[in-house]
Length: 86
Image 1 (cartoon, rainbow, N blue to C red):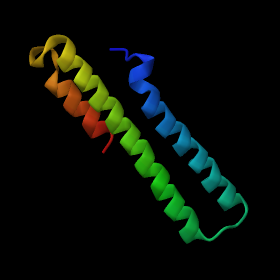
Image 2 (image 1 turned 90 degrees about the vertical axis):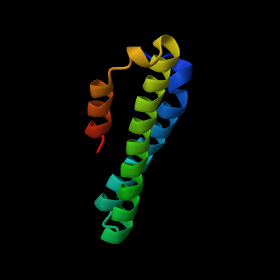
Image 3 (image 1 turned 180 degrees about the horizontal axis):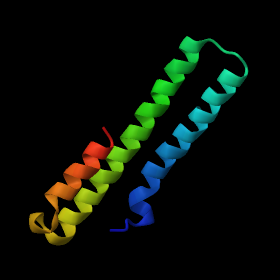
């Protein structure tokens, strides 16, 4: 399934922000910053990416339910997608 641009705009924004934070973490490491500071920022990047993934799966699930009802949702496929983010 393909999502419409308006359905993914917030997700894309979140992931772009995470991308910027990741670049900052890399820069911190290159500049010799404290490990604790870099790890704190890296944990935030990880959380932002995970939330983006969950939002993407949730948006797809909402779309499936809206278009075809519960019968159109492949429960095993959705479970696999959620678990791939774990």
